[in-house]
Image (tube, rainbow, N blue to C red; front, side):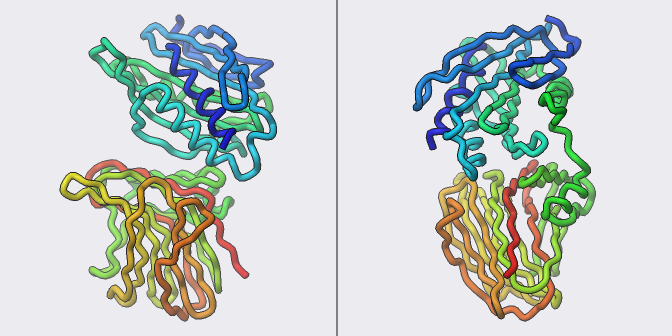
Length: 374
């Protein structure tokens, strides 16, 4: 928790402050990184007040000809603050702290990787006082051991260019050559245990980055209706499995229309069970809930749901001898039972997928899928 508060302070600093247009190679021996910088960089050091005392942070900031800001901030946290298992919580806290400190509006967030190191990419907008045009920004935050790195670009809406921002982010590498360039999504999914990607229509994006997976639906309806003719054109990751198992990823998604991030069990004989995190907009109010369903031969056998406060949630499915149980948790530790149904199939698939019943883009995010077998 203290480590998370430290990252709040550091990640808020880069947006509290605030040239050449052609990218130039830039390297920092102390920072142990290099990148292609679209602006001439100026390096400063600030002492950031945190819950455990001041921590020095190194800021490299520059502005291109269009007054778009580019920056890299890095800071070394006390080694005892980032414990094994705290990385995801610390990154989530750093994103929330950055958004709060800069009074920005978060537009999108997704898990990312820098080689083996976890991170977050967050897109946001700001509305500076006295300015008629809003600002758009993207930040990437990584934890490399006990060192935090934050890359950021921010500019007016009319001057911000996605291709320039992407080139800047993709050029960032550690001194050992580690970059954020991803391997082939299908290879990555298979090698990290997520399974085989399947996106009917080819207009969705599936990315697997180590322990994290994202499924992006680009403004098209993607539905799963086993009780209404068996329609399923959802983008998904499928992993065959045999026998008893426990599967438990962390799921998060958008909060408008009817959207879902789901964990699905598919039996060989046609039984389908799913635990789903969903959000639906009705009468101007967003309802977020988790749902456990069992479908057989196109009919709904069981459907149980419960509301929860929203945000990320862990969904879990357990197959024990003769039955499958659906559970959910708000912290990944304390689990609530959603129901249990008998099942006899010896072979099945575990699936994570995204559902979109609207015409708006939608991002489902999953982390830490663990499929354990006795």
